[in-house]
Image (cartoon, rainbow, N blue to C red; front, side, top):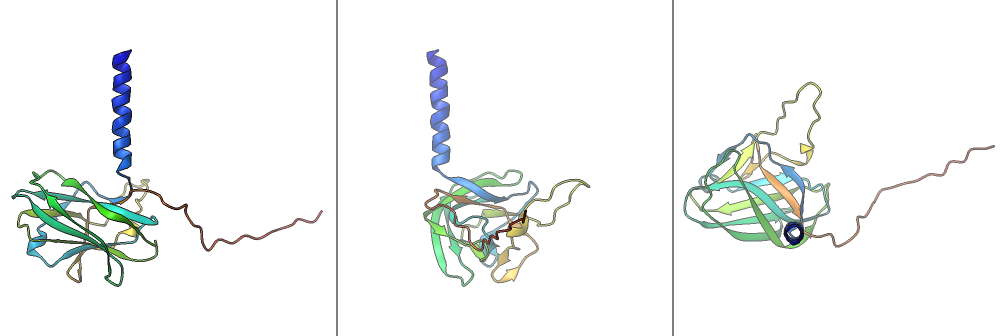
Length: 193
């Protein structure tokens, strides 16, 4: 009985640790992907329309066969204003099929709007660091449901639009305010008896 109780306690504690980190509310991460070296191209960025009202962190799929180094991740609005940024140390990460998911938390959550274009911009000089990307085209079986990739725009290298998108996920770390529903209308209909 004691052993079962301790296993349940460990499981509950690990669940709380995971959820204290926040939750991913959007993910573009197809299994099939390629990679590129950001240090050898113009500064990469990933434009997107958020599907939530706050962004507190991001995931990107990476590999780094070289020595550890730093990379800066910045969240920018459509006017290119920096809203949040974080410089993180990227350890050596062996290549895997599809890349390894790497999480970055911003210091504060950023309030965003779903009809405004935002960009995740990645800056690094690490020669062996690679970002994974995938095509935005979907091949579906005759009765398969499509995925909601409408929020993902083509990746940018400098200001040049590409024919792919970087693999990424958006996180919300905590909900501070209840959702606000705007543009809602109602009408009263009476049926005469």
